[in-house]
Length: 216
Image (cartoon, rainbow, N blue to C red; front, top):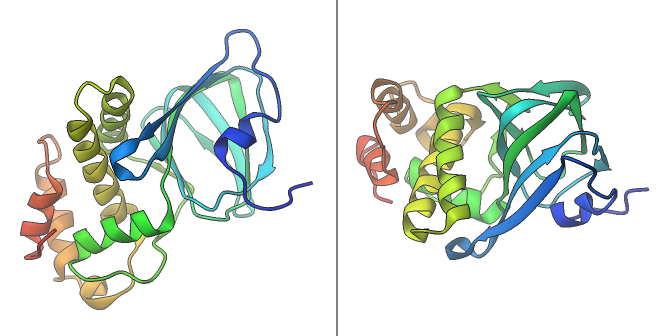
């Protein structure tokens, strides 16, 4: 039985890894040690569990299936995966296995990123509307950030990329309900337009804030 929120390390310990499976944890240390995971699963299935943190990531190969928010979901390459804090979820391979990259940022950190994009303090808990979204460009940006953090060749570059990825996700895929954010002509609408117009370029969080007329 699930006694309460657990870490991803604890969730992974429920079953041993089998042949062809691998899991590697590392940390985004400059952000207070956000847990990061890169894994390949062929048979490994998670029991239902929750985290105190978000679970945000992308599928690199194959397909994952899981139950969350009362529905069964499938995610494949080009998809972003979002579990909000305390979302009960499991996870299993579909059609032969999958590889994925995941991060587990805390609520306070995601509020800080949301505040940077929104230009004011965000006290609500940002809520990702869907458990899976097809967003190849967002998945590419997130995967680049994750790989840079894993290789740790330039920690600052990896963390800058991760901030950009999270900021983009919050603008496009989350409900930020405070202040002017609901207005079509508000800051987030301008940021969304910039992202859509310049999606092939490297966008810094500073650029997004400047577009919104805000400071990071």
